[in-house]
Length: 434
Image 1 (cartoon, rainbow, N blue to C red):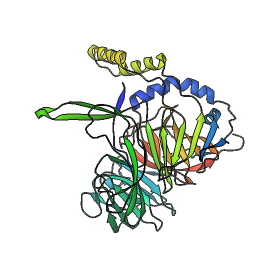
Image 2 (image 1 turned 180 degrees about the vertical axis):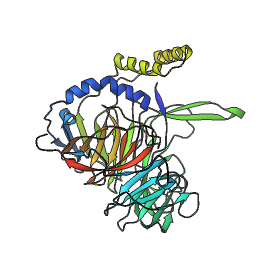
Image 3 (image 1 turned 180 degrees about the horizontal axis):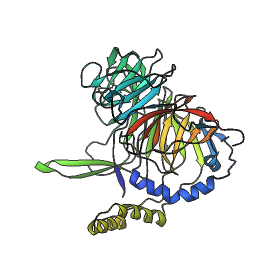
Image 4 (image 1 turned 60 degrees about the vertical axis):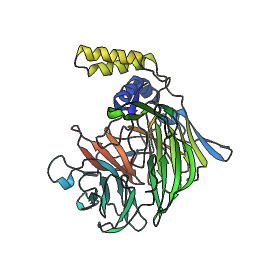
């Protein structure tokens, strides 16, 4: 079985594929995907039906060949970050970013000065926050949100604490309603009121040391005391391996199959979207757990055939430096258990307008040293109500959206030297003549 090591999510997306394997899988299917895409006039309107109170929106497969009704500017209007020079302008581990109504860009970096404010022209306006455990400090800053009064709230996944700041950096208050959640890991957080928050967390069976498991995930609301469980749903497949450690201890390693990604994105305070990445299907749930909307695209997953397996082997052999390594790689591929189907969706994103972005496995995704994992380069965008698809939007190579609104997208991008930058690119309408 092929697997990728587990990582802690940043509160927006969970479950990613391994770049080394996914890139080869995509290349194996790229030619046919591009050929199918050319010249299509797919309808962007879904067939709508109701099933036990759940609205199901079924789009034809041709929607994946339709260009979006807008495109991104060829060059960024604002590009933040430098390779050398002022450390205040260098990025290391960008976790989140947002754009204020005034056009300011706020970036959360897990190292150095975690929060940085930039003007609409890209000029640095100030920094605040630092690594540590004191007031206004963070252990692992993971996500950033904008309050109705313009305040900025940082979620620290290590201390499980929220810190709210004025836009100029003054600490307003801190609260830790989720600190009592000691088991499992928190997948996403939603600050819902004074001293209150909702969290989506995943638990693990106690006493289990190996095998495949579907750990339950729970949605809880907490305000400093014991958390109230609002709903539960099935989590994603986890593989637990155990082996004897030194001194008689037991080492347990947790992994997830790369070919079956589980994706999750919070949608304001209305609920969250989940995707089982094998098929083109996204489900929206309220915080109370009720499923109310399903987005489905009528395209069957591609088979994981012998051609794909051969590409995987060829890619692995390219990195071998000795005959012993090559022989070990051949043995591993010969004995490995493969899935029957390739993933269809490898990334999930919900923007500030409530639109759902589904990242397609049909172009080579890139891996970011910031820890955001792999990402897509073509996205199916569906409006908040799910009544219409905008079509497929192409994003620049080596980039991933962090934030989007009605005017454009904030992208985390890498240059040829793997230096991270944050770029603002505006939406531009496609000319009527194409």
